[in-house]
Image (tube, rainbow, N blue to C red):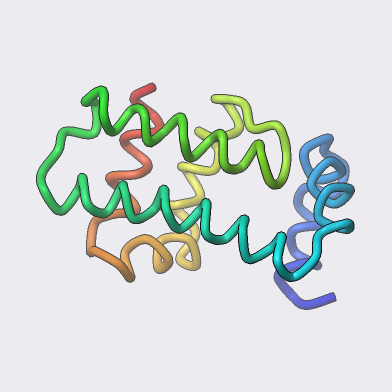
Length: 120
């Protein structure tokens, strides 16, 4: 177990979402993990394009991306409620690792994704 996995289990190991994710991913092949990454990356790229083009995070198009983001998590890992997605959005701006993932594409993207998720 790497440090990230240990931290995840320590923080959320007793939650239903963690247990569901662990049960699902324990059966995944490398191809499954790659497909999950493609789904996640596709949504991130859509957010980056919208942000780069100045699309309001409250717009119908961006709010559809918020739904796609939640659906991708639910498809591959755990049933992601709006409340859970909002908790993730907080991590996107508060945890430097998540912030770096988004802002590494376009500076300010983490805040944009956060704001879009919170606006739903």
